[in-house]
Length: 148
View (cartoon, rainbow, N blue to C red):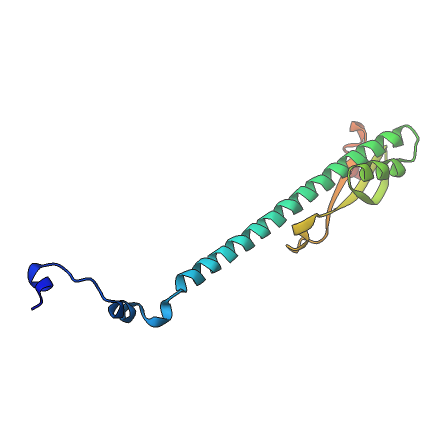
């Protein structure tokens, strides 16, 4: 019996013993695991940033559509070219009018798109965010339901 075993102390494992337990192929596997986790975190961050940018672009397109519809409806009320005013207002707010229609009764419907910035294009959300808005006098609220 060795003196370490006789005294109740454990002997320190030798380098050969460590290799036999861990195996020669497992050296550096922690580094590979950490690199894999870092890659997953970076990918997840990129996807979340893209989704955030896409949502911001959608909100911006909705704001541009709302303002364009309101300005166009006001121009319609004053006998001006409502769609020209809507296009100008949408452009000032970073949007482009795709469709503009006078629905009658002083109601104007506008569809606007806005380019999605940066990472949002990589996420697959497309390069455009679209939105639609309808504006007109309060007296015309029921006219859409009646016309449908």
